[in-house]
Amino acid sequence: MARKTVEGSFAVAEAVRNCEPDVAACYPITPSTHVAEELANYYADGELKEYITTESELSSMSACIGASAAGSRTVTVTSGQGFALMHEAVYCAAGMRLPIVMIVGNRALSAPLNIWGDWQDAVTERDSGWIQFYCENSQEALDTVPQAYKVAEATLLPAMVCMDGFYITHAVEPVEIPGKEEIRKYLPPFNPKVRLDPDNPVSMGEYALPSHYQQFRQDLHEDLLAAEKIVRDANGGYAAQFGRSYGDGTIEEYKSGDADYVFVSMGSICGNAKEAVDALRAKGEKAGLVRIRLFRPFPYDALAKALSGKKSVGVFEKSYDLGALAPLCSDVSASIALLKGDRPALSSFIGGLGGKDVTVAHVSEMLAKIKQGKTLTEWI
Amino acid sequence: MIEVRMHGRGGQGAVTAVELLAVSAAEGGKWTQSFPFFGVERTGAPVQAFCRIDEKPVRIHQNVYEPDVVMVLDASLLAVTDVASGLKAGGVVIVNTKKGRGEIGIKGGKVFIVDATGIAVKHLGRPIVNTAMLGAFAKVTGLVPLDALERAIRHRFKGEIAEKNVAAIEECYNSTA
Image (cartoon, rainbow over the protein chains, first blue to last red):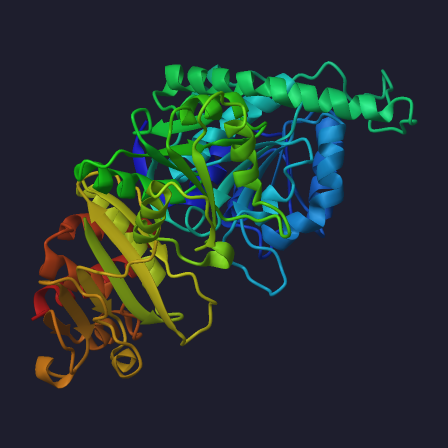
């Protein structure tokens, strides 16, 4: 596999094409990304079977729902406000058990108007029943696309591949992109048992009475939790074939095994955190990083094990739950609560909202505060 | 790791230039990353774009605050932007200008000048200096082989346009002082 140097969005678009989706449906305007633009180019060049230019993101997701229900491998791409407009259909896709893959270039939500990056567009959809991956760089983002299809189609759950808006979508980095033939060996064709078929009519996403509605939600929840193991298997299988893996597929532990204090986060900031941890390690400090790759289903047990015995933990996130504890920190708190005996002190850091640049120096400052072992809530 | 900050104006092609730099440095065996400063795209507005070049994979994702190399595509920016802000000790500043080195008032760093606008007009017929300035970068830093830069140009542009850009790059390479 040759290495090439391309923009993150184009790298991901090529990986999407090589997964051979039957239908792409996208709303091609800001705040969408170059992924949608490049998929349209592939369609124009005859390299993609179907590309529907929709009139809104709500229509994009609706088109994906129809196509996926008919048994097609589908993809859409969104960001920020466009993602928010999709909200109603995002729940439908999960409730109907349709393994759509959505590429998200994470961006802030209005108001005030802002086109820059943070995670709130996807994090705010965390309750919807979708699998959510957060990627550290372009290589991981493109590698996660076939993994997302593999997990989604094995579990009949939709999956989001989230990459930081601008920091990954617009960064030109060296990547290796697996070709169609190689991906075919990893990702079997999508062949659902139940699909919309005029010869064998079925209803999907229909009406459920109070006697049945809740059972659908309970089943979705339990199957989503069970998908955690499938994510690990997909990461392991990918590593075996392509030689690249991302922690155990759910979390990545970086120099955290013997660490006293640990930085926890997701996405591209974790590259900055690795630099900060290395600098502290060079001074003999027992600092570490745990990167959460799988945000939904949340890997509570794996994270609890990774944080067991630590003196203090700080969670940095580009997301919020206004009026409550920040969402990633809330999940980490629930993981820590599973631990017996002494539990690490837990701090919450919210930052990087609307594109605010968070540097290695900022991470170093947060790690210095985490080391103090207090419980802090700070905006960075 | 070498960090490059390019100052230009919206429409001058700073983003394309740092991408070409990343592609050609990668071809020369380095690990690279380039990206724009994330601003609103308005023609003529001051913009920045960044490139990192290293012997190992680049892990960080943040703006460049302490560059090793500053490139200025448009000398009119010198009046409104402190282009040498954060420049590392021993860092270099490469400016597209017709003026002399002593006349442009940059404090700190080693300053190189080239009339990239004149060279671009001569070869391209238009004052588009983003590619030409890469020749100056290659000359001053030695980080990007000239032939790798020219291959990146021929990959990005076709036919006559590519050759005109290559000619501009070579003249800039030879004229930077």
